[in-house]
Image (cartoon, rainbow, N blue to C red; front, top):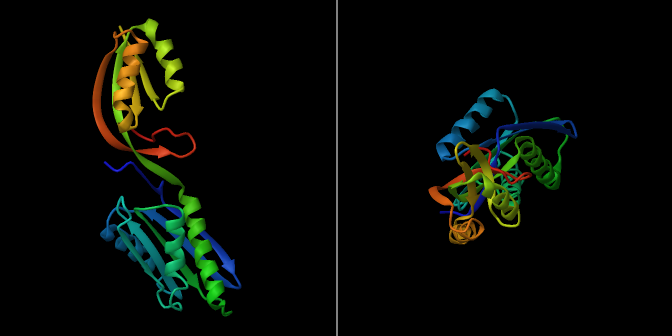
Length: 218
């Protein structure tokens, strides 16, 4: 299972004016080339009279698929700068489209590169970035008297307490990196003197908020 990768959180849109040319940039999480082309098609339809609809996308957990297009701009001045921003942000499963309405003033190669890169940055910022990480998901059943010890000790470890359910016993949902599974089981047994019932639910890739480090869903 892949350890982690970054992707867009949601759809993003931004715009700015550069020497009378209007740039409108869009970003979208996608998982296939078909989805990327459908999104590109929707932008082209919306801006059918634009001077250019330039784009780049990266797909695959290992970023194996990378495509870009200058759509009539001088070679290397539009699609590649967008692609470079995607790479710089470490993103995959993402497409960015930057639409330009020419304002009558030539920007030159350097100006175009800067403008399309800026469009990509703004669209990505508007969408937000999340991380997709591998986790082993456990539910730990313990007596109420052992909850405080587990909560305290887990803070110093890479063990994320996701949920606590209170019934006749306490059921604690804990996420750990897959490589920490054995260590966590050993720790729990030590903390509870072997009285914890440890249930491994599954290993999964979960979307994680970069600020909080907590999964967006489970």
